[in-house]
Image 1: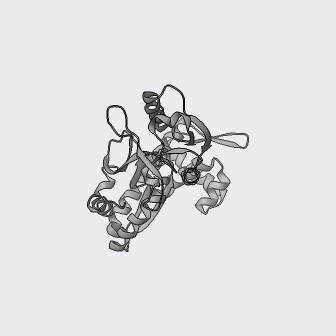
Image 2: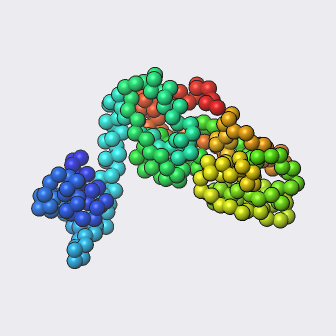
Image 3: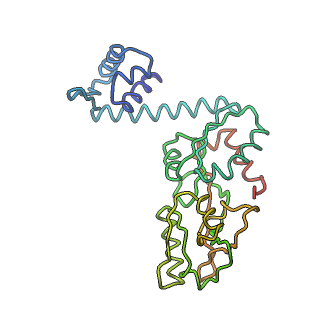
Length: 284
């Protein structure tokens, strides 16, 4: 089964429609049907079934699709390796890191290696980790903790901070409105754990927002206090700021990791970017 057949199975599986799959392959539907029949004859098993106008893969077909996707990934890794330093570097990064840190990183890195092309996926950390696990990107930059069997490097550790326009005494926090960001559930559990370690009453949450910059804007005009990671703060921000500490003296933090598979780490351009992260001074 050659590369074209791998993409044929991949596109049919993605579209579940022969007409659309044929369009992506730049062939006619009859030609696509003929090639499927050839593959079925070659492997001696049916790959597709029809139920009215709908199609679905047989168990044997599903297995072959998995094989095809694996071959496509392996071929892409091989092509990237052979292209060496002129390769396209596929990076996935959490939206927060992509917005607040990555532009400066790429600016300096591409100044050193101008021939490199970057393909960037920005999204939720969970989505980036899934892309990495599926080998659809060379490198993933994720925030928080994940079990990863490949290579990982700690890029940054951020403090979690309480910010407000004016000074708030710690014991008065339950009486002051909180501008609440809609944190991921695992992060929210950590904040709740810290809160009830120190206070018996629940926080006075009067606003819930899904954008950190809006949270900052409301805190800046005295609408209440907010709890945010330090990546969102800069020298121009005029906040009263205090880091969150657990009772045992441990600060609440969040880590940002660079991750890649052991195979991707062997690519020259991936090695160069890892070396840059290891040697570059902190951006802030």
